[in-house]
Amino acid sequence: MSPQAAAIEVGYQFPSVSVVVSREMISAYAAASYDFNPLHLDEDWMAEAEFGSTRFGAVIAHGLMTYSLVTRMLTDVVYRLGGWHERCEMRFTAPVRVGDTVTTSGIVSHVRSIGAQRLYAAAVRAERQDGAVVAIGDAMGRVPLGGPLRTGDSHR
Image (cartoon, rainbow, N blue to C red):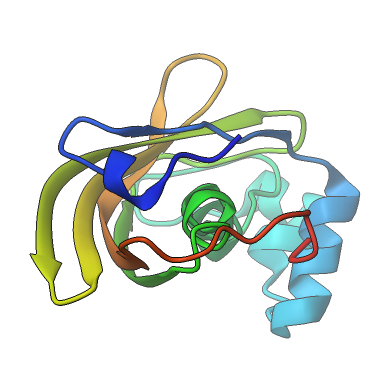
């Protein structure tokens, strides 16, 4: 159950989202985003490709696919509170490969009430199953104070 808007305080931890990344997921994201870079789709090309001193050896997921998992984590809470996610800035720090499990986390670092709304800032991140941080950043959003809770799971 989502918290009431008043529970969005400094230290609040967003419930994590964990997803096992599949080749089908990466292909679906490529189709949805029109990003058909061989970096994400062509195993043979990636077996030989070099990026400066970096060699991935296999396809990697789109950074923005990882980003979308973080924004889902935020939205799963704030949407039900009648709020919205406004901004998320992330830096991608390690690759995500087919078979990796990506787990998100977020903790509220600042809050400010303005009128009937609570604005929040949160430190957010995504990690692989081996503990490597694959993305890190900051997010902001707002929730109405005393507003009705939305029920159901209609946004998925």
